[in-house]
Amino acid sequence: MSEAYTKEDYLETDKPFAELFAIKNMFEQKRQLEKMAIAAKAVGVANFKSLYAAYCDSMRTAFVPEENVTTAQGQPQELNCGDWTVDEYGVRRGVGSCETVACQFPVVLTRRFENIDSGAEKVEIAFRKGSCWRKLIVPCSQYASPKELVKLSDAGLSINLRMANDLSDYFTDLYALNYDRLPVSKSVGRLGWVSANQFSPYVQGLVYDGGPEYAAIFNATHPAGDYNAWKAAAVAFRREGYAARIVLAASFASVLVKPLGVLPFFVHLWGVDSSTGKTVALMAAASVWASPEMGKYIKTFDGTDVGYERTAAFLNSLPMCIDELQLAKNARGQVVFNVYRLSQGAGRIRGNKSGGVDVTPTWANAMLTTGETPINSLGAGAGAVNRVIEIECTTANKVVQDGHAAAQAFRLNYGFAGRDFVQHLLQPGALDQAKALYDAAFAALNSAATTDKQAMAAALIVAADTLATQWIFADSNALTAADVGQFLASRAAVSLGARGYDYMCDWVGQNLNRLRPDVEQGDIYGLLDGDWVYIINSVFRRVADEAGFNPTALLSYLKSTGLIKTGGGKTTVTKRIHGSVVRCVCLHLVQDIEQTDSECSDFEPL
Image (tube, rainbow, N blue to C red):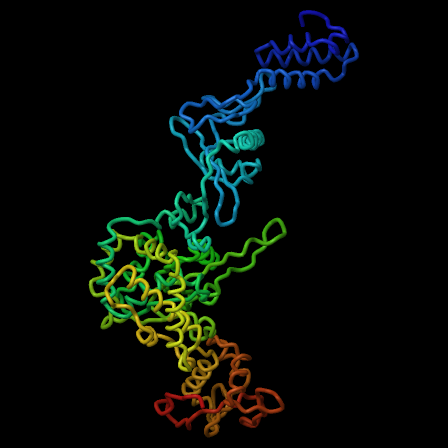
């Protein structure tokens, strides 16, 4: 200290504070701060350090011009940064010992985004490391939370938690000071219908603001190549047969699911033979909207239920294309893919860390899949079978003959037809036309032979193909209700109870030796008695359960159709078998089961 200060000097003048503030060397300034604090306390001023901090704040404010602006070289735009200094050396504020460094390189806000789907705001952060400016899009809640802000270190914004507190304050100030100055862009985090007259990604100036996990799909959804070349390839592909025409039509039909109020549905191409064109058909369907390269828009069955749900919700109205069903098999060779969950159009309710629940994902689209086997198992529920149109592909009945040429054409040319189709749908009266076509096809398909849900999916495909033929292909090769109707499942095939009954009849034929009255060794399953077979209750339930049928539900169906004997309101009766009285399911068979398996191969319900 240059002189001894009195209590009045500390409390009524700024001389001691100015002397200390003038010291540029930070180490020396802090040493003098401690000495002055001791001297001030000796004359009765105990709060010298807090007074000095207030003096520094006042000096910092005094040195800030009316509008202090960012001056980093190559910055996207000049912004008002308040009492912060933003230049080549980073982001900081204060002077002397009160200086705080928020970032060691220049970082600014460049744009605001308003999500047209949810209304949520995000911002674009630009920062320069070396000679290059890099950009990130983050929710406002992320820069407002230091702990969340630190996570941006993975993207190159290298900061620690201490710096994150100051950087969060800086972003908050920068946002408030430049709210009207920052340009605003419309953004979206998914594809499909956003409103009655907006369809993502076909909204002018629309920017993707979602996470990196779906950026590849969004970026793949754009036109490339030559539209006429795609049309020529697609018209040739449609001439290949029903399977080709249906899968391509289903791709267009996907965007009609929501506006026409139809349930999501599956079209599944399957066949044990390879090189039948199943994957090429999926590429053709994907090329309507996006690049058909595997791993971009088209995914495989090597995924989880949560992954399928979130991908379906992201695509929302666009078709979900999944290849190679065999990848979804477990160690026992059983398919473990849940058709019913995806065809419901809504995900599971999931809790979050805050004690509430996450937003439930929803979608309204078509699922186009391929595999070596049918997508539904023997014991699949009626709801799952109802939502799937399955088409078998064989070597003798390929989807496409020259798969290589077709695949090459769709790889090089894609994304035009989907945009064109949506633009037509947005014209006045187009959806009314689609609804009229759908209603007419549904009336033709909805009969006692099939279910209404199967007819709904098929009618939507017919309506979409009629519109695509009129607006895009102009080849007079539109699908009819009869063309698609031949691939629909019958009511008996959809009914879980009918399939369960057929399975139990087959099981009886396979186990005749365990149902005879003269069995001398081995397990006994029951007793055959003419047109009736008594199956021990525990055996019946085990066999049904192993086949994927709920035993209680199956017995209820058999009781309601008169295919089992009942007693006292129960679905079982008592029967003496080999001297023991046991509870049995008494199942009626249409015809007598003879002594050989070959004579009892078919049983039909009454």
